[in-house]
Image 1 (cartoon, rainbow, N blue to C red):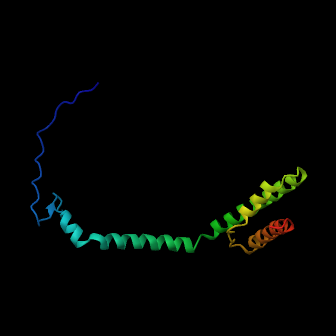
Image 2 (cartoon, helix red, strand yellow):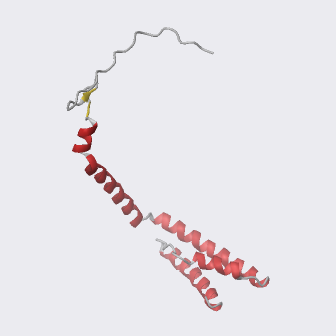
Image 3 (cartoon, rainbow, N blue to C red):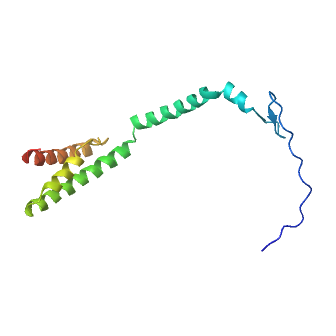
Length: 138
């Protein structure tokens, strides 16, 4: 266990701020009083900050990265191919209900690839999955 030795003199305590006068630090920076801060900036600053952040997030959602769109489309096409293979295996075992449910889930809200070739390939895989569902009356 270590001990504390050689403490210097206590630092002076800051004086209590007076109402209406901003508290000043040694470097000259002044902090507004809580009631002044609420009255001066209050909800307007919070709304301005939140709306700026919301606008940035909305912009990012509306214009996704083309590489991210391609990755999502590629991943979905791969998952659809896996689900179609599962459907084949399920048909051999006479239990296709789970495989059909997996296909239906994958066909909801498809990502659109930025690369035209990838988009065409993903559309072909999606069409094949839709044909398999249509053959089963879904």
